[in-house]
Image 1 (cartoon, rainbow, N blue to C red):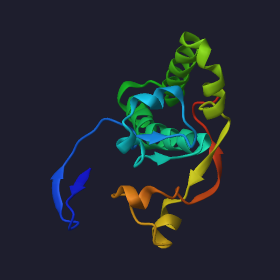
Image 2 (tube, rainbow, N blue to C red; image 1 turned 30 degrees about the vertical axis):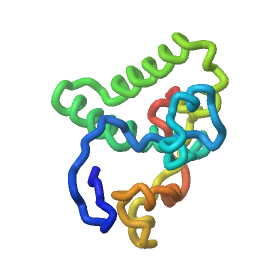
Image 3 (cartoon, helix red, strand yellow; image 1 turned 60 degrees about the vertical axis):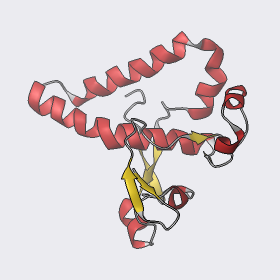
Length: 153
């Protein structure tokens, strides 16, 4: 991530291990009280389905999709096995925290279909890459649906 100064000059590079930016829901949750007001006021707020899609895009499409191919080619483990293991981890987490069932339903990471981000359309429409937080305020250009690899086969 590039960090810019007041003159919009890149001044340093910051590394993070998030799949995406720190993002909040459009309504407050009790946990948000721990976030300082000045920080909370600048964080993006996205609808649950948009945040879920962001996670699915970043983790599934951006990482696991390529890992599945490598695991299959190099280790002989079918891609379906990797997706099953990932799905099992989501389910195990949900079982571990049953009190959060309403939140899991809100995000529905195991939905059968998810929106397809049309990167070429986004680039051609002038959306560009999301290298600055202000440019990521609008969600990706979506076109159609694709199968969610985390959903039950």
